[in-house]
Length: 285
Image (tube, rainbow, N blue to C red; front, side, top):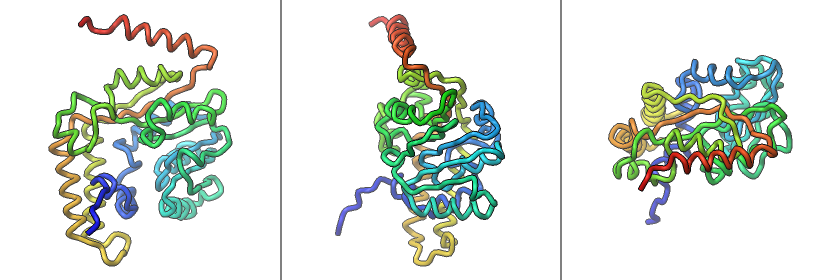
């Protein structure tokens, strides 16, 4: 019998049935309330008709929120899951927004468009680029002058213990503190202009939405699918819930930033200051 190598996160998130059942009870696939999403978009200083790129758009949660927020916006969304793009296209057609949305199947790293955008959204995807700083460097050329980027990033609210790392199948280096994360953004040549730290209740509601989606998938068949393996899905629900309640709840946090690129001619000065400041504030051995 072939051994399964996928992690519990991959087993859950790789099946679109979960997210197809979650998006109707949660605004975006991040731990954010609708009012938080709108506040973040307000701080992104969008014009009346911005051109927007969503990298890893999934079912288009951010895209549809942006189109509601700015009726003159046009959006390009890229995701490697063809089923996600198909669903998002159907939703755009249902809402009468097909002429304002260009949804593409592609790799979020290799298949980026050769275009400039007023806003780029890349929420919770730095690992696909090899980390936060490589992600910022890769997406920088796609921003129009005066453009902004919305990024989502996990942070350690407190030092993770071994149980937290075990259930997340993570290492301490996978995330950093809020302070060090902001330092990394600045070191990469970007100016953070706004940050929203998801509240514990936002996290809880997001996880409950995922639990609800998984449970509906198991017990109701999920979008009319046949042959759903109910016992295995319910076991996955139990594992997911245990990881949250007994592992990372209160330890793993989530930040959403609005950032702007610093001109290359000033970047060396900013980086040198950041490095000097780290030296000045380093604890004495």
